[in-house]
Image 1 (tube, helix red, strand yellow):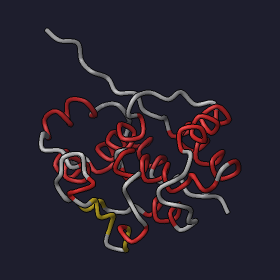
Image 2 (cartoon, one colour; image 1 turned 180 degrees about the vertical axis):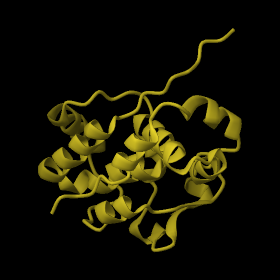
Image 3 (cartoon, helix red, strand yellow; image 1 turned 90 degrees about the horizontal axis):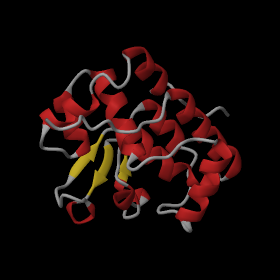
Image 4 (cartoon, one colour; image 1 turned 90 degrees about the vertical axis):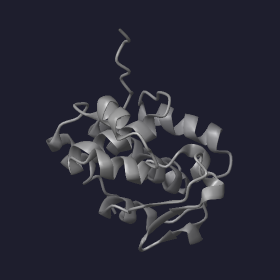
Length: 168
């Protein structure tokens, strides 16, 4: 038998602290982090995004910019819309160095693909729909998604996560 893969994710407190520290410390990194955490967009896909790809209808991940080469539209949650309304450059410049400074200032653990895993976990717990979560993420395998992400967070934690807004 194989060992169950358990993705690392941010708890709501860590996600909030990371966003607040970014807001105070390096606000031009907010689009990058909010797109990763609250839209589940892969870092390399964020690096190819432009503001014109983000509309009121959603975030257009063009096929040429997608890992799977398949176009997808990602819905924009209310809290993501609030974070994106603060603006900032897309893509960010000197991302790696700046991200490291933000992580250290926020004192959060950072694992591989943590932004995407966080999004998947909270999206699945909140919407209770592996099909919808897989569709938003550009996944074909809903069973894999369900196996990996169910039971990682509670519905209550998901409600807290999706209410993380900028404090202005």
